[in-house]
Image (cartoon, rainbow over all chains, first blue to last red; front, side):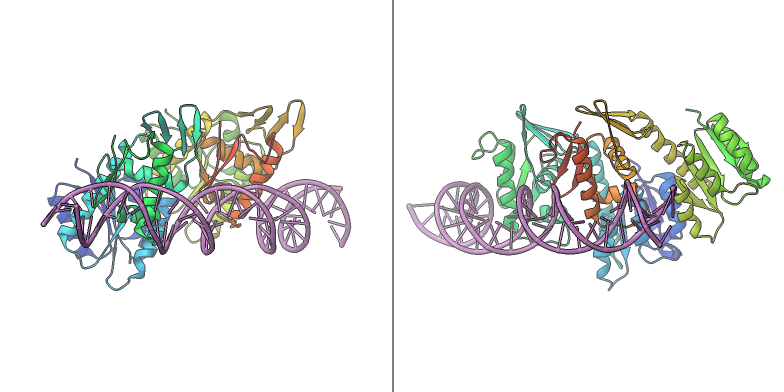
Length: 227
Length: 227
DNA sequence: TTTGGTTTTTACAAATTCGTGACAACTGGT
DNA sequence: ACCAGTTGTCACGAATTTGTAAAAACCAAA
């Protein structure tokens, strides 16, 4: 609780408005008025989340974000982009932002996104490196899997899907979400592709792929990992 | 804990300010007012980290750093460069500095960088100096390798790649990371170059290069060292 | 400048993974 | 039991990724 949020925004009215908003929601607020100071604070004070305007003097949002990632800093970043610059989304996500929001936005939506990001990070932190599915054991970090003594080969995509399922802690994951997270914002395969990969996982991990014990389908929604 | 930091800086006000800053953070502080004395103390007292001004009489920061490295001293060096001399960054990292900071800087950022460097070194220290890959034995520090009694010749790049793989503790290392860490900021070879070097390592270290036992490829991601 | 070693590029083959579409099987509601 | 929509599955071609050899570029020392 009481997460610390760093707001990096050069326009003072917007910066104070955001600061007030989050303060009133009981977050602890840090601010910076330009990119360079923002980077300093991000590195020095390790906030739980960063809200970052794209357009800024000295060091723009993209560069700042890219630099953070280069330094292996994985604090969640929510980018604010000016209206119209649709390109920004791709560029921003490319630079390593976790989400983005187009100005003007509603405070309700902003708060929702922030909560979502913080929740995602919390789950990721709790995520154990190893998954045990009966006699199958999967190491999500090393990307290895064993059934008893024998190694099972999973592809990169399969590991990514498992990781997403595990992060969801038994909650259903929609096909759309699989595509968004695992495939990313540049590829747009059919949602059926997801099913195929699930089939692959079941074939490799389930004792009886016809009657999955772990990789359950949630009819009309998607899939979930039953722990 | 209580790491010892050597500050090499000719301008007295700055030197004492830095000394006070680090003393107040419970580091043990050593100082030197010029490059030659700095080098002496660096060699004689083996500090845990050196903060080094680039501009100095007698022996400048680049030369000092290069000399340290020539003597196989791998103490982490953080260089302070005057504003505007953008070139300094490249030159500094070239000379073997581990990080650099442009004056004027905030104390918060300086402390953050120092902590980061010390942490990085700590991790490196935990790394065993010798790697045993079957009957091949590699000394990562001395940069020597033997297969039984016969010496195997590895190039500098190959050692650096092995070190990175070993540091990752069996986790996959992406090609991008290889380029970032092994090649650094100044060179931008193709990612295929990484593959070629891996091939070289396999040829020299693996009993059967076609079926690597240690240097595994993680399709779609990179490579890992299977311990 | 030549030399010897190292690094990088390039090109092509081989291996792996991916995406799709068709159709069967299944689901839940009526 | 029937129906419309959803999911499982399979095979195949496409696309991507990797292995590797050979040539070119590079670089420091003689």
